[in-house]
Amino acid sequence: MNRRQIVSAAALALTAGIMPGSLAGVQAQGAGAPAWTVTAAQSSISFATRWDGNPVTGTFPDWTADIRFDPRNLGASRVRVEVRTGSVRSGTREAVDNLPGPDWLASRAFPTVTYEASRFTALGGNRYRADGFITVKGVRHRLTLPFTLDIAGTTATMNGTAALNRLPLRIGVESDAAAEWVDRVTNVTVRVVATRR
Image 1 (cartoon, rainbow, N blue to C red):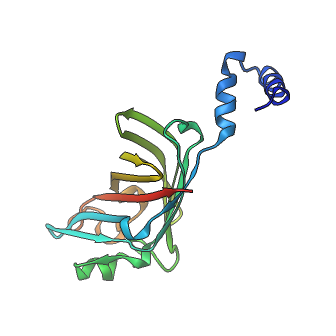
Image 2 (image 1 turned 60 degrees about the vertical axis):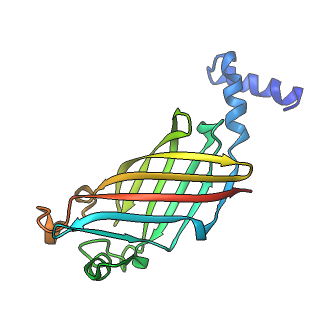
């Protein structure tokens, strides 16, 4: 930032009622966060729940992510993930047959589930928390994702797990609102290996 830009930013800060001491924050926000390209072969989105008392696991192999993240500039960081729910894979046939159906993920009418986060908190060490929103079948619901992040050179490895309650998202409420067959809570695990652009 040259002298003229600094003077302009200071004037803007004073006009907006920002204290001069906050100018560093204005500069940091303007800097943005770097973009990351996901290495699909090393990344995954998987789930684990219980169906009729038995463990059920699976994956959604078709997904994309727009990641802008800087651990030194969390205020400028953001992420948007889109998952194609019709791509579900599982060793349990009932999951493959039922999850895309209208009472569950309604893949035909709503082919994608999205997760967006622009608020991140450093928890110490390599631990962070993303506070964002997941949208399923048009229902938007707050979802917190704790995760670890390790960066080596231009490669980042992220691992996180979130507990997702299906009932507020209207998943399986017509056929199993009482959770007699399928647990209310599903653990969704995300692993991302990405390269900084």
